[in-house]
Length: 138
Image 1: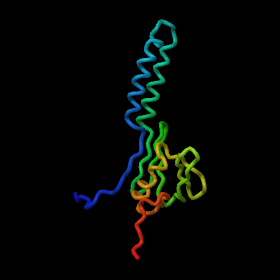
Image 2 (image 1 turned 45 degrees about the vertical axis):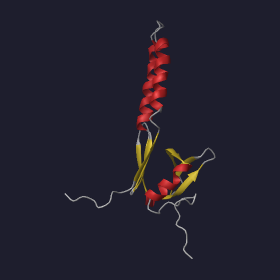
Image 3 (image 1 turned 120 degrees about the vertical axis):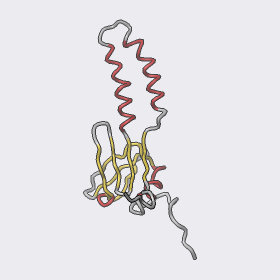
Image 4 (image 1 turned 135 degrees about the horizontal axis):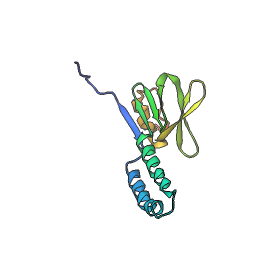
């Protein structure tokens, strides 16, 4: 089995792990309500469970082949060749623009991540900030 000389660049954008601490605090607050004697309020415990699943699953991965968008209920591969570019909304959310002009939201990707995506894409996506541009030698 031959090993690769150089590892392919890969970047994973996910919700920070500190979110689990906030979910833990929510559990502490919900337990007295859920088990306080009122029937049916035990269903409140489903909220923290749903949040744990959301934090664990939601991510965007940039790799040499393209982007992988993973949400709670699915996963979608976006090859670099199928992308026209990236669109930025007013709230600094980033979407991938496909060749048919449809947009796919990139969860957890913000404008500060665009230089990393430009590097991982190998030049297929341009960095609008110019941080990854090489200066011209004169």
